[in-house]
Length: 325
Image 1 (spheres, helix red, strand yellow):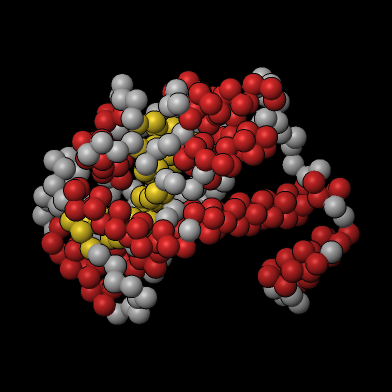
Image 2: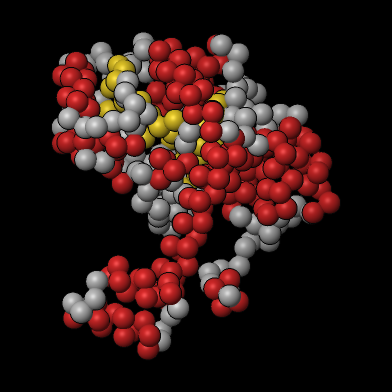
């Protein structure tokens, strides 16, 4: 077991002292933005203070509704999220936003930074926005997003919005993390609708055709309805049309998100959080195996590699052999 736990770099050291964690949690619970930002930073980088901080947050978790926004590039996800924020705030609700952006190949940080298009968040204590780097994860999210959800949940935000990178049908991680999954398309995206039919369509709780004022919006809506009609869905998937720039259709979208969230609330907050924990475990296990294969130089892995090259075993079988050791 020791050799496994030593894989990967050690956690970054934190300037947050253990004795300061209760005060930080108290200020976070009171809605102090600096405290929320400090907690999010510790959890995002998984510093040495992150585990005790997560433990201190446990009594306050499980109340927020977590909604994931995903879809192909150009669908207007950021603009729609901004419009949703405005509507929720007009109704008196509070919103936390986690926007996962592509990583810089040099620094590893989020390229798009603070999502300047989310103007609804400016100077509003009822909204907190944090951009996270995808860190190369192809599923649209990074495991850091799950830890940041806990910080925003404990801070008392009613709604937590996850906006994924926007790489099309690879964005399946949001299905494991969000309570409600909103898949966004828009007219004029061409083959992305076809890709959605074989990928993102499967995880959607709500389908949205954004940019509804553009030519072709009705056709895109009918295409999605047609795609749904040939699939056996456990529950009907609503298909909505929005125009994020004007707010048209956004109240109906928010209402539908809340209704689906209410239906899923019957499973209880622990079940929802346990699903996110399983995602973290699966990601961590995959990272450990990937590092072992890429970094270790030993006969066992070389032998497995030769067997895969020769076709004697499949990569799946080789991975199972490695995991069984």
